[in-house]
Length: 328
Image 1: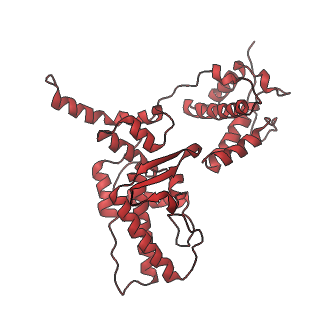
Image 2 (image 1 turned 60 degrees about the horizontal axis):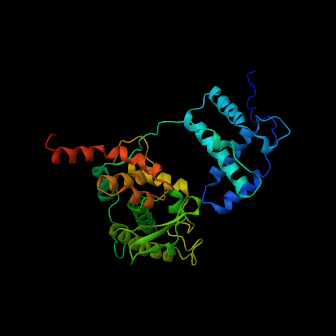
Image 3 (image 1 turned 120 degrees about the vertical axis):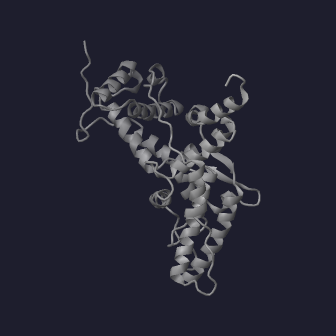
C-alpha cells in the first residue's frame, strides 16, 4: 500500500517536535551559526515532523518515514542539494537528541543521503587579484594640512576596505569571521590571526606582510578619524573593522563593499566576499600547497569539503606533466 502522506502548507498547524526549541537555543549558544541558519534548521525540522501522524514518538520513527519525506520533497520539485540540506538539519537534531540521552538511535544512520554534483567554486585569476589589490585598492596618502572631516571619512573607508579585502583573500576568512574579528585575535608581530569559525572551531592562519601593512595603516587612519569626529569612546571598541559610526561592520556592508571593488576587475557572475575565500584556496593549491594544510586554514571539518578546489588545479597538473613526462 502506498504511503500518501504529504507535507502540509506552512500555514497549516503542525505538531511541535519535542526539544526543538532547546536544540535551537543550544545551537545559538554553542556554535557560530548565523540566526538565518538557525531559523532554517527550525523550518526544515518542523517540515519533516509535519508528515508524521500523531501522537509523535521519536523512538518509533522508521527509515520509511525518512523516505516519505524525501519523496514528498522530490514531488515538490526540490533539487538533491536542497533535499540533502534539509536532511542534514534533521540529522543534526537527531544527533543532539542522542547526545542528550533523549534518543537511543537515529534512523537517519540507515538512510543514504541524496547525491548531487558540486559546482566548482568561482575564483579570481592571478591577474584579476593583482588588479584588485594594485589598482582598485591603492594605498591612500595623507594630504598633510588638507584632510578635513570629509576627506578623513573617505580615507577611513578606503583603508578599512583595503585591510578587509586583504584578510578575506590573504587568510581565507568567512564574512562572519571578518565581522566578529577582535583586535586581540591579531598578532601582527608573530604574523598570524586567531579565528573562530563554524561550530566555534578555532584555528590559526598566517598573516601575510601585505595584510599586516594594510591593518597598521587602517588602525592609524581609524584613530585619526575618530579623534577628528571627537566621539570619544568607540561604540563597539575591540572589534577590528568598524563602521563610520564606531560600531562593528555587518555582513551586508561587507557584501556591498566587496561587490563594488570586484565589479572593476572581474566578469564573474558572483561578486561576493566568498569568491575571495575561494581564490585563497585555489591559489594555494595551484601554488603547490597540500590539501590538508589548506583544509586546516579554511577551517573545514573534513577533507571532502576542501576537495572541491582540486578540480581547478588540473591546468597546473597538466603543465607539470607536459614539462616533466617524456611522453607528454
